[in-house]
Every structure is written in C-alpha cells, then in structure tokens.
Amino acid sequence: MTYQYYNKGVYCANGKPFFNKVEAILEANTSGKWVEWDYHDAAFGKHQWDIEPPVALDELYRQRALQLREAYDHLVLFFSGGVDSWNILHTFVKNNIRIDEIYMFGAFEAESKQYSALGASRDPGYYTREIQQALPVVKRLVENQNVKVNTYDWTKDILEAANDLDWIWRAGVRFDPTCMVRSKFHKVFREHNELLHRGKRVGFVYGVDKPRLLRDDHSIYFAFLDVIMTTGTLPTNDIIGEYWENDEYFYWTPNMPELAIKQSHVVVNWLRANNKLDLIKHTNNISSFHDEDYYREVNRSVYPTWDQNTWQIKKPTGAIYNELSKWFFDGNFEARLKWESSLWELERVCGKQWFNKNTVTEGLRGHLSPMYKIANYAVNSG
Image (cartoon, rainbow, N blue to C red; front, side, top):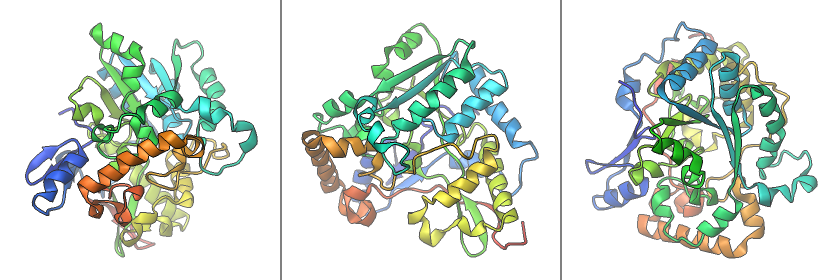
C-alpha cells in the first residue's frame, strides 16, 4: 500500500479523527482525555526496527529518489541550504534521476539588510544567509539539467497575513510567524497550480528528517515527533481538503520505512564506535533534544559526502518566539502585536495545560509516535 494523503499523521480525541491538532484538543477538552497521534503506526509497526536492513544507506537514498520520480510528473524539492535537503539534491544528481524544480523560501527582503552586519556569525537567526551561500553551489550542481531554481520571498506575505487573526485555525500544529504563510506556497506560486490543471501530478519533497533517537537506561529508540513535520509545511492542505498538494517527506515516509530504520542503525553504530552514545537524550530529558553535538555526529554518519566544514547557522532555540522569525520580532511591532493577539486567543480556547510550560509562547506540547527499539544501550552490545 502506498501512503500519500494524510502523510502528516492523524490526531484522535474521543474516538474521532482530526487533521487539525487544535480541533482535536477542543474535542478532548469535552471529556478531559488526552489527544493521541497516529503517524502511520500500523505501517511502521509491521517492521522489525531492531534489525538493520542489509541494503546500503546510499542505495536506499537512491531507491527513495526513484520512488518519488516514478510517482510524480513534476518533482519540487524544497531546499533550505541545510544538510538534509542537500543530501536529497545530491542523491538525485549523482544517480542521474531528474528533479524538475528547486524551491527556496524565506524573508530575503527583510533579512538581506542585516547580512553585512552579521557577517559570518553563526548565532541563530536570518537563515536566508544559508540559502544565499548555497545558491551558487546548487546552480552548478544542476547546470545543463533543465532544472528550475525558484525563490519565494515571503516578507510581505507574512506582514500582510498578520491581519488575518484566524490563521491559527488553518495552521493546526505550529504557530511561529512563518506559519501564517507556510501553507500558502502552492497558492502564491501559481505555476504549480497550472501544472495540476493540466492533469500533472506534482510532488513537493521536504528534507524531514534525520533520526531522532532517544534512550532509557536499557534501550535506544527511534520516535517520530509531530512538530518536526511542520518544519517544512503545515497540515493545512489536509485540514481544508486540498489533497492535491502532495507533500512528501523524503526520510520519514511509510512508503519506505527501511530508510528511517537504516539511518537509525547507522547512527547508533557510529556513536557506539566513537564512544558517544551518551549524546542520545534520555527519555527523561527530551525537552533539551536540540543538541548541536548530537546533530553533528548524526550528519557525519548518515550524510558522509556532506562537507562537515560547511558554514551553517545554529538551530533555532524556541518553538514560537524562535530565530526563524528574528527579522519579524526585530522590526515589525504592529504586525507582531496582531500575531500575538492570535496566540493569546489560542491559549484561551485550548487551555494552558496543552502548552509547554503552560504558556502558548512555548508552543503546543509535542506528540511522539510509539518508540521503536533500535538497539540495547549497553556500550558493548548491539
């Protein structure tokens, strides 16, 4: 079975399914029960996660790229300049598998004003600097391959979107300022719609995500996290019924579970060989998951052709007031007030208990999938 729609998972409250996490919360509030999240549990649960697939990781990358190519007439790679999307592009190019379009987005107009002042600073914020750095490399990679390289500057759209105080009902899961427009890519960029009107199947590919490993005192596990799904796009298309927007996660896909399983084993083997298993966060400490040391080792293990000396900005440090929107917080006071008014309404209707630290400013509490055991935690055992 090929999974296509509802690929961001389904929430369940009082036995009712929802694509919108907020709607699920409101339903759960009527009974006082918790919301459950099903990210293709049945599909992933059929696999033995503690057995490493024999196929080489690089071959699985190739198979996944070919799977996507065969599924769609037009493939669009959303490219951030980071390692996950770079590896996808490299996989397509190296294996001579056609990619039709590379799509980059960000607040280029607003952030470019600070490029000179920021220089080579790696402090979180103004992430379009990574895209600008990667753009010449991307163009060289795809030259003579008839690949469109498009950019979407969402500066003005975000500022205008703040006037719509109901945007939170379409965002569904995540609510930083970029989420006011993160679901509008295909509506703003009309060429995608025109392809669909001509009967073409269009697939939108996101670099979600590298392995998120956890451990207890005895075992190492892999788990999916719902809020990570929204780092590329939102569940808005499912919420409003626009199922023709085919969002594809390259790594976290029920159409090839072997990829996430293989990556997990490669990471565990690498960390074990380098005496760094302690970088895997304990289940009692997952709130501090974003650890640069952990991600550095993960990148080295599952993306070996990536230049580890590539300059990159540090990861954002928050869920809502995070550095992805630093330009917004730094210079747009009126739009910020409007955005915040929607946040406070969200907290009022849901209740503080659904948010990290009991405040909307820390984002909704995340939902983990079942934890799939990869290996024993003991240093000298597999």
